[in-house]
Image (cartoon, one colour):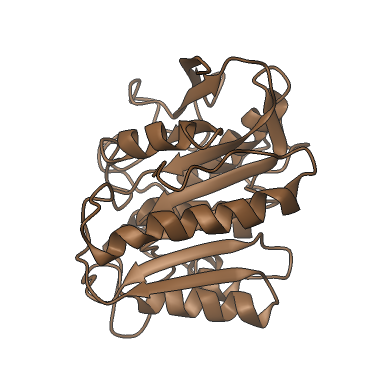
Length: 288
């Protein structure tokens, strides 16, 4: 069995951009678990849910442990939230954190034995929204800040999204989006985060799953994103489950929704070889 090392890396060398100067803790960071046998592997970057208000980290730990059994490295992104900024509007801060995470991982990919062309984003809820935003706006640059690592891509090579937020639409408003849009967003700003209207053919291949019973993040979000991806000929796989509330236990195995894990594994096995010729991993169907 291959040993692994766990360590944390701050995303920003100094004060993060668009950050309140009065807040010194809860700085954005990466929590990495890297296998130690020096063989380059894919990395799966986990984006926790929490409605951009806080981070639901705890449910990700068993998923992270299972990913290690897939012969992949794993990492959890601690992006900024309203809780960290004491209720202030987040604006583009979470997107800057996500872009920085991918750039930092690619910068140190040789040191950490990561295949830089095989970075997979796996997000849930608002975390899925952020993962998708970083994929769709991978090359976006803030007018207020220039990242010193801009030479590296700021998005994933593929993404898997569980019950994602996509955008506000008629009949449903996501409170989470208000935390990044601000109090009085311009039409241009609303459009920027209306993800289904920002899809282009270069968006990476995508795995989507949702439940029809989810009252907070309606399945319409995944429908609209999947349709937009299909219209741009982006490889997309969508799974809709009839039963399942919003905050279900992703580690539960006795529900229909638990099938997302085996479906995700199947998608991952077909996706990784298309990203890098050097990618060869062992996928245990019981790993998740």
